[in-house]
Image 1 (tube, one colour):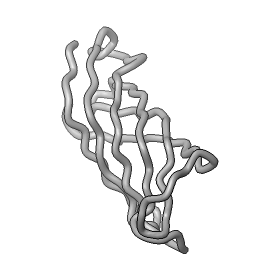
Image 2 (cartoon, one colour):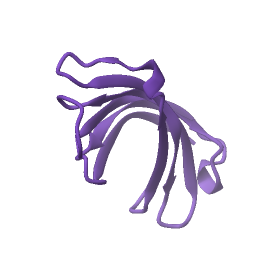
Image 3 (cartoon, rainbow, N blue to C red):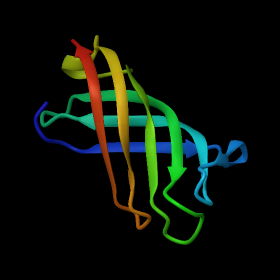
Image 4 (cartoon, rainbow, N blue to C red):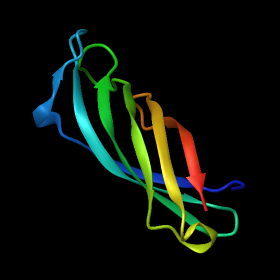
Length: 107
């Protein structure tokens, strides 16, 4: 795809949270993401999975995300794409995040 930005939004359902076993919580999460190729074509995705606090609840606590993604509503050369896979990653509690997707895309 070349280089380009990835923008995503996850909504976490903390009302449905369960214990992470370390004084914090895990909760279901879902959202959308868009990968933009160097030429402007987009690959849109839906994500679903679980967000967990790393350790006990507190200020600036890191989180992990483990889930799946499905390609949806794409543009340009990805207009007829299909596929999906797994996604893992998280944030450092200070607004920095890192995610890795593994799967397939056909277009």
